[in-house]
Image 1 (spheres, rainbow, N blue to C red):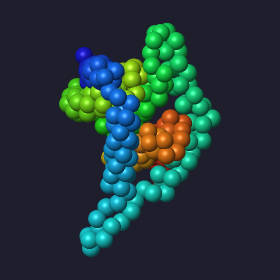
Image 2: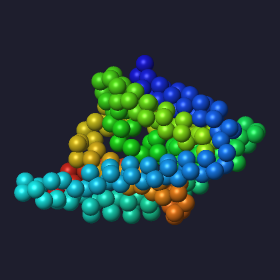
Image 3: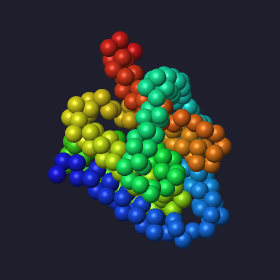
Image 4: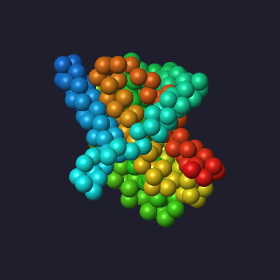
Length: 243
């Protein structure tokens, strides 16, 4: 099956969320609060470490050199403008509200769980690289590894954010499945440099998700999603104009 890795990923997210929901009702509010804080800090560290490892490299003389910073800034600014014009976050929240109305009795923080989990599961480089590899070679090992990470995350997140995390399996399946099906077309565009730049932007967005979880700042991370794909546009322009 061509999109088997994405299907397994979605199923594991659902299973992890269901297990977390079993615990959610038994947790006192103070435990939910401290778990949310721990999750927020963990996501911030994950995004920060990924960003720093992408930006800095050790030179031959042992000093640190930075790379791709200007491109990252340009991608984030332009991507945010595009995303704000489309208002991706509003559309995600409306979709979450639509599902919540269809299934009566879902938790009040459904949208928060759905949007947060969707972004976290989709913005990482592994979602792109794993889906691409499955489409090109039929090897879904990277997506299986991602499934274990997402399953654990969905279990923990659903203990505080509820069943909205479970429904994040839908955009994950659609997003990764689309990349798998379009792998032949995308392969020439996703060079190691492009993937590295996309990963850097993705890690910055993960950092933003962590800030949102901790309620330090309300950042429209969903509206920044187009920034992840702008390194591909830059690569095409660089080929066209030979720079």
